Image (cartoon, rainbow, N blue to C red; front, side, top):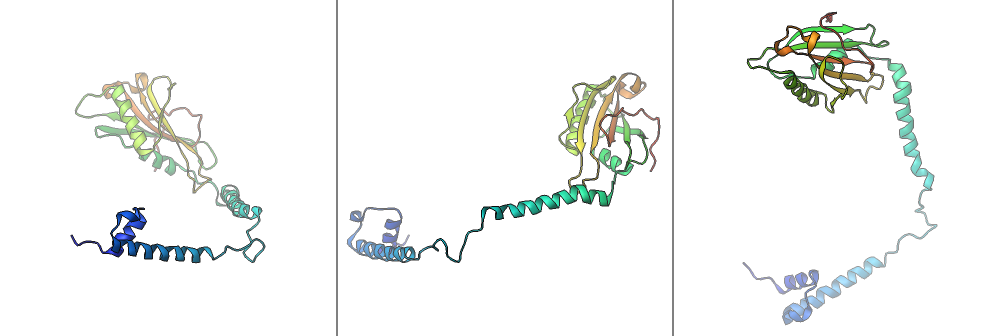
Length: 232
C-alpha cells in the first residue's frame, strides 16, 4: 500500500487530534501550515455577523404559525361536514357485499346461501350475510372453524376482536369496524364472523355453520339462513 504524504499525515493528525510531537519533522511542518490555514478560514467565517434585531430580516409574529393550522382545520371541517352533505350518502348492499368478500375462508368451505335485510341502505339500516359450511376432505370441529375465521378476519379486515359475549348458539364471534377516511359520508360498518352450532347448524357437516356478515349499524341481530336470498 502506498505511503501517505506528509500533507496527508498532517491532515489525519489534525482530524484525530494526534500529538504534534509524535510526528516527523516534515509532517510537523505540514501540520503547522494546515493548522494556520484552517484557523484563518474559521476567523473569516466568524467575521460574517448574523443579522441584527430590527434589520430587514424580521421574524414573523408568533400568531403567524397558527394560520396554516387554521387553514387545514377549515378544509377538514368543510370536507367532513359540508362536503359530505353535498356528495350525499353512498351506502349500498354492494358495499356490504364487498366487505364480506374480503374474508377469505380456507379451502374446504363452501358457500350455501346468502341473506340480507333492510332497504335503501343510504338512509336505513341494512345487513348482508353469507353462510358457509365445511365440506373438506378432513373432519372439522367448531373450534377449528373459530380459528379459521379468526385468521381470515385479521387477514382480510384487520384488527378483528373476539366478542367475549357471543350471541346464543354461537361458538365464537369475531368483529371489526370498517369506514372510509376519504369518503366521510360512507357509514361505518360492523363486519362479523360467527360460527353457529345447535339449531342453526342442524344437519351441517361437523355440526356448525359459518356466517360472514356486514351491517351499517351496530345493534343488529344476526341473519338467519336462508330467510331472504340476496339480490345481485
